[in-house]
Image (cartoon, rainbow, N blue to C red; front, top):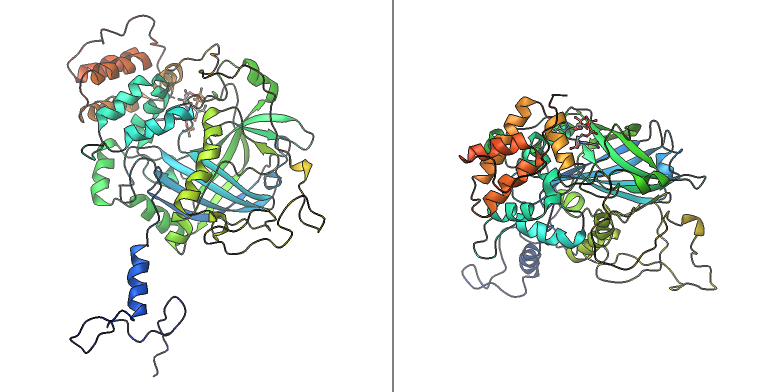
Length: 498
Ligand code: NDP
């Protein structure tokens, strides 16, 4: 039977004469420069990698859909949030600090990025599996990431550097408590929640505005590795999370998350007891309960990892009509930094790649640039007299009024704002005794991984400020009593598992 396989071609579609032999002057002679097929193979191979993401480099993703089961039209006019609407979605999960080949099970927050291909353009939600973050001003983000990455001299990661930054940045305490707890090592991406973390602004069809936080709660249940299990898994299967998601979807076991939101009336933000835009704080559920909106289902694996996962580009600046940013300084910084990194990493025209392309027609006046696939037709400018697209004032993003001197300053302090109060609540009222024991062990092992004075003493003081009993137990791991510097009012509230 004749061989039915297609003939190999060059990338220009020209049939190739051999997959094995280079063009040479006689079987034993030198390779000839006119072997264009060989040169194209070598040159293309040399250029196979785009720069990896500086953060969130290691990840995986899947396609699926979002269904607005309960809907949110009473708070938001975005079309995809209307009750019953179903919107295609691409999700990418990741670790933060490790490089492309690093272990999925590392103790780290996890990225939880979603791209909704809505009928009003792409809506991107670039969340994490934690509701808070280490810093609250983008001025500190680059320094924070440097402290988690590699030293300049040895090219090694360095726990001392990490704890140095954290303990000099007390606003990190909530996120570090979370990270050192069970949820810092999820068993799989399917078994963790996703949070917008940031506060956004919603506006309904009547013009009313609401502040909102998103919570995607896993329907698979929360499952975490212990510290030792996570370390063992890093050796056994560094790609365990990519494998888990791919296998589950391939077997028809489609993971589901329920989207609920916390809604704060616009005016209530002014005198809320915590600054509602401070990314290191949650809104306690007792103040703002979770209200169900819809469900996210992932049901299709990518067919081409590089094209769909590696080149996927999420940007929180992609907000559809009815959704706007809040005065969260980290969010405002990210609105710039995400598209900027995509332009550098993938190229100016990253939005024309199939994974990033909206499912609706694009009518912008932007044009040209490297690797542009197609341009809008004439006219190439606005305003024009030749029928080119025109902007619609109805698409105006919701906003808020701003006054004040131009300053470089921390957020104005609210009644209950304190860098340690919510981490203390997490330790005392959310974690049970066994989870607190594991927290002490995890912190101790992390600190024993090379943390030296004066950082070590500062770290013991830091945990004492989170919770006096926890601080004393961490100090005891180092044969010390209560840190000398930790005096004054320190929380030791009532305990109890929940
Ligand atoms: P609640 O008791 O209403 O909520 C506690 C939350 O803690 C639940 O959402 C739960 O998530 C989550 N949680 C449970 N175990 C852990 C863990 N090991 N590590 C991290 N989070 C865990 O209390 P409040 O809303 O008053 O918040 C109390 C504290 O809970 C906060 O200070 C914050 O640290 C933490 N938290 C609060 C969230 C919020 O948005 N209010 C969200 C997540 C954490 P689940 O239901 O999925 O199990």
